[in-house]
Length: 283
Image (cartoon, rainbow, N blue to C red; front, side):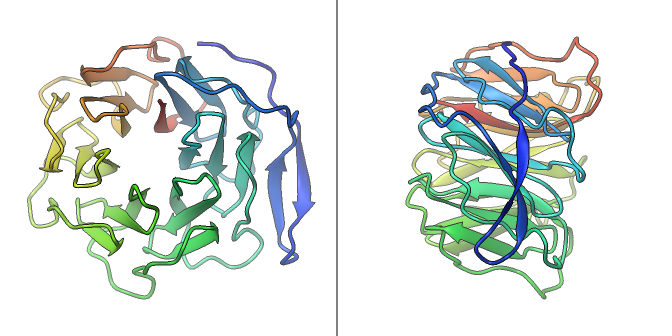
C-alpha cells in the first residue's frame, strides 16, 4: 500500500449557493491506474493497493461519515460521498455538484458515476436519487415504503440507467437497467451490503455481511466467504474488468479474492481508527 499526505480541503460556493466540500489538489493530470482497488474508511481516508493510484483523501477530518466511493473509469481520480451529501473529489475527478446544504429526506448511502466520468448519482437510504453532471434522473423510490433501507447503487454500462439494492437484497431497476433477480423474497442468514454489475450489464452479484454471494443473470459464481469465520463483517465488493473474478472487503480492511483476480494487499492486520465502508476497483 502507498500513502501520501492528504490533499488540503477548502469550502467552495456552488452555483446554486450550496456550500460543498471540495478537495484542492494539483490539477496536473493524474496517472491512470492498473488492476487494483481502493478501500475507503468512514473518516474519508483512502487506502490504495495494486495499480490503484493514490490521489489523496480527507486525512480523516470529516464532519459526517463517508459511506461510499466511486472511481473514474480511467482510474485517474475518485469521488467520496458523505452521509450529509457532501462530495469530495480527488485526482482528476470533477466536482459537479452535491445536495449538501439543503435538507435531505434520508442520509446518503451510495454513489455511482457515469461512464463518461462527467456525472454521478447519490442515493439515500429511502431510495431517493440526486443526479449531477450528465447523470440523468431515471426514477427513484423517494416517498415509497420500503421493506428494508437502500444501501448501494450501480450504473449501467450506458449510463442511461441504474440499480439500487436494499438490505434485504431487493433490487430496483431504473432506466435501461434490467432486472435479473433478487433475494428480496428469500430468508437470508445475513443482510445484503453491496452489489456489483457484470461488465455486460446483463447480470450482477449481491454480497451479504457474511460474504455470501448471490449471482444473477450472466454473473458467474467464483466463490464466497459464506462458510468462513470472519474477524469482521463484509462491507462491499468489486469485480475485475471482464467479470472473471471479484474482491470482497471487510470492515477491518481484510480483502478476499475469488476467481481470476489478484490479491494486492489488505489492511486486515493493521488496526484502523475507523472502519472500512466501501471498495472500488481500478482497471
